[in-house]
Length: 289
Image 1 (cartoon, helix red, strand yellow):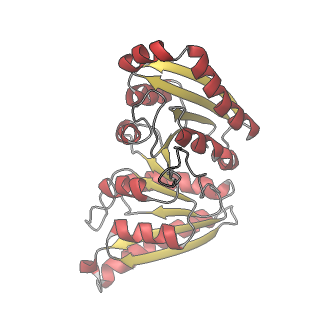
Image 2 (image 1 turned 90 degrees about the vertical axis):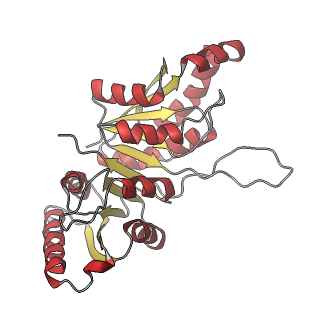
């Protein structure tokens, strides 16, 4: 399913944390990785004054070794250009099945890559994007250091959360969840959040229940996955984050845009806000017609 990964790196401690946690994707067929570093023209000029290409190659070699120990075949590449443009273009042109980025970080040359640029990639990507949340270490006031904590939730098969609004984009994302169930996911929670205004609307509740039942049957076919279905009322963002934190979710799969069949806007800004806040990695699936 995810045979080829494109991993955006800026050689920061956050990038190291990202590459250290990707072994769990092997269960979903991941085998080849492109570890890509993008330098803007200005960064390339500044870097030439203080860093040699050997320094970058050595730093990328460390991350390459980490990935190889997890069983990946790894290629490294340094390119000049916008990370958002180069990453998404390369993923399309070279047929990478999943883009991987961290949710924050600071590069060797002083500019943010894993952070603002990560969300630029999300908005422009035509391939699924896996966003890995990174937490920085807390240091004492006089203690130097800029390290990052290891990613705590990267057992990608243990518990997958699929929030849905039954839009076309959500249905497209569900196709990935279906493949995950067949390739080893042990537990899947299907979550639909209804606005409180719909509380007590029996017809709408019945429609939602029927859709969830259909999804459950599809996921159970040919797999031993444990399925949970939930209908909750409230704010989609709040309820998704609550579920992630309380249910030890290891991976969230969501469409990156959409409008529910009972008219509430669910995906889009919600999915991007979840990506900024989630304690668990989140895979955002674009709907490309």
